[in-house]
Length: 459
Image (cartoon, rainbow, N blue to C red; front, side, top):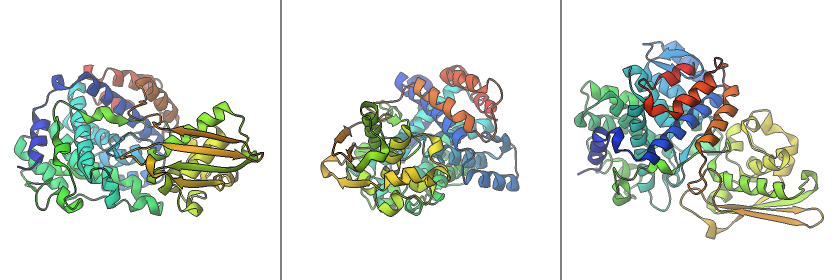
């Protein structure tokens, strides 16, 4: 029997009381972190264009577009919100599965909750905990020891279609038969090529929104009796055989299902760029906190790590002189140079103006990458930096677990600070007191009779 049936039972039968406390707390961080990055991403390239398109489409005013205050059909709202959450590459993600969670999960669940009306905080938490677990397990089971990325897919988008359908179906109260159909119909839409990163294209930030939109659409179709693929995960033409060429581990997929929630292993980002660069940022910031490193007196810089650190440093002509914001977000030389010049790495360092700063480009061109195969990890791995000064003095720092990793997690208070930092970047200023109100409501999310009170504070 296809494992989709195990997940369908899990989605339809699990109740809030079945969730461990750590899973509930992880969801609260996921919600606040995602709302932070939504506000920060609301003004970024591609988001406004989507908003204009949704306005043109019109339709029923079911769900809200964060920051813009526009009401539109639930799939359309989820598409825009999912895109803005992911736009900064500042959103959370599972550290081993390499799947961003909140951009798909939070955008889907709030949009559907608004459509349904009266969805409690407990029910929202349950849907998010189940969805995060499902998305992470799909990523963990795919190409064990590697990831869907190595097969050319953006796993957030690819798995996001299925996860969004299941979360939407849960909130809509679909029965098991319709839930199977919803996931099958979502599978029929699956896509998400990983090529957008190499091309520096806005397509990268569009994927999660497309997945949220497609998943909700699939659930709405199933609700009306439209049928879908029944063996969408393990069938001959299912996800793992078609997209992974059969390279998956069924044991990883369902091990301890219902007792272990992978959402607890979702990491929040302290820096608005690819998480695979964060160990090198931490190493750089550690060095400049201990030593008087004057950028103009640096002779050369070596960054080293596993294959991911090495790959995100090449080709140097692009990584040291980024063409686009996406190039900069996925460049180890660029983020290390930014940390050295500015002493921090923040949202304001990834704008069209910031990526053309000559002083940072000059330092980035001094960076050389070295591959250390012993530092290869499945997921987010370690990184190191060696800074050699013109007088021959060398400073070295290596970070095994970056801030925001499973081993060094950000706290809810860290996410509060991040939310406060991102809120001023909203395309529209929040009403007076909204920031404090949102933080307080998320902290007591399980007590809310209507979870969408939070969204109304954002519009």
